[in-house]
Length: 328
Image (cartoon, helix red, strand yellow):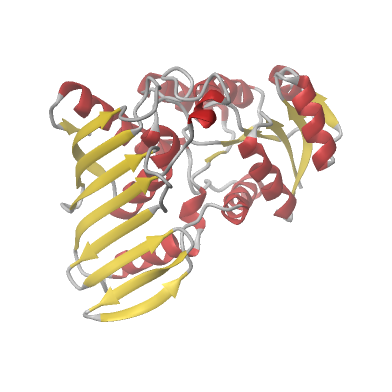
């Protein structure tokens, strides 16, 4: 049994504690939030006995073996490093950090500490992406020609006003790509083998925020495929995450709750469920971390793997800012 401490009790923490509850070999030992009233309420709602206002105190608790980090993105690095130095295994929300320098520093500390670190890209674990990965690797689809992601959502002005860290470069790291679209971009990097170069326009078209609410990207992937990435938080009423993979012998498409659709040489097959990011995906990801801790094997999405989507997004921002092609 791996005993977790949850750091940060905002919206996403509910998915983390649900995942811990579903895992056979995990339990919630403690919670922490700088807002002690919020921490106490979360603890009461979820039956957690220990409550802290300072994450350093939680890290000093010998009963806590692993931490689940659910704080704003720009705070992840310092908490991850402190947890690693305290010998605690780590489950960290996306993105693991918001700049290359912070990610480099984080990885160095984690790898020198020997703890296990898993990063929250839960959609990789679901049936649709898993089946897509399997089909691409099997060779049945032939060479990948195009890979695109449509990541167009809607967030209200109230959403951005609901917390001071939202839509800030310092704590959110960006807008529709870094916060909302990062899951889709992670799926693209995982399924294609990585992004090679990008051109992009990112802009703020609707919301009164300093980060982007709209993005259009042209990408080339490591294997030679090309595609587009469209991101938004002003696409009313909001759409589903959609991934399209077009190959020599057919196409693979999946879209949130809708089943994955595979077409091979003109024949369409309903192959698996979709990509929706539910607590089930979080549970599968957490169970993989617990397995890693118990067996000593690497987790599926360590920090070096998790940084690939962030490096791609940072390259997109640079391409837009400098109005030129950026090689990764």
